[in-house]
Length: 242
Image (cartoon, rainbow, N blue to C red; front, top):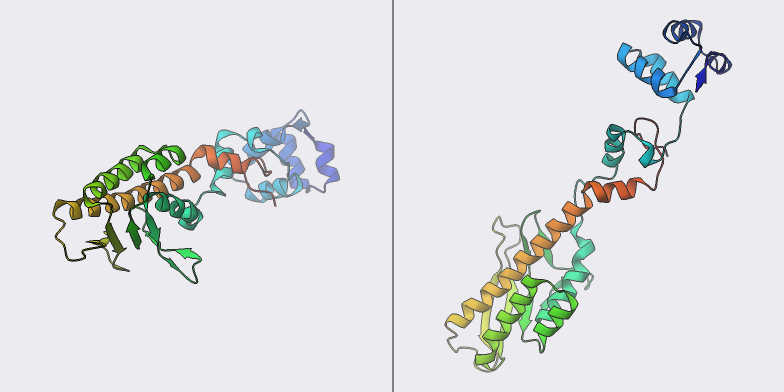
């Protein structure tokens, strides 16, 4: 509660006190009431003084819905940094038998993402017990399907198929380039098996893109942003208080 005498003690000008007397003849009012009345009357100078002198501190959950929305805006992700998931993607790729290339001294995993589709480079060979490992460690039905497809193609080829994976950098096409061969007989025609390997490795690229999109959507979800916002304090309008 703000009283007239309190305003005088804070050094409010005569015109400001006169305005307060006119609008709040009872001699006191809640901060929110005064703030709203100043906003409605367009008295920006008085509003600035009030906000400066009464820098009231609110938790996120104490804010109004509109102020909460403003608070969440401070934590919204404009450009999602997909590098935070590259280690997880690399680990999953290894379960499938895919070794992703790395750059910059082995620090950066070679996965490119444009916000929708992902491309990657690396090398594929048969990974023993891949299906079981993927089922146990990811429980992701799409990854399990890819692992089973790779296994089913490898089985009649005595588990000798291998592939190099690349893509055209800076190209508008987000598709990968896959070259498949039999490790023992490099020039043997592979027929449908070659196409199935290519498709499975492309599907893994689609899975990477989907995983990154899901993470970006989660980080910008109301729930995730609110969770971050709860760690800080705000003024009545949801402005971040440093």
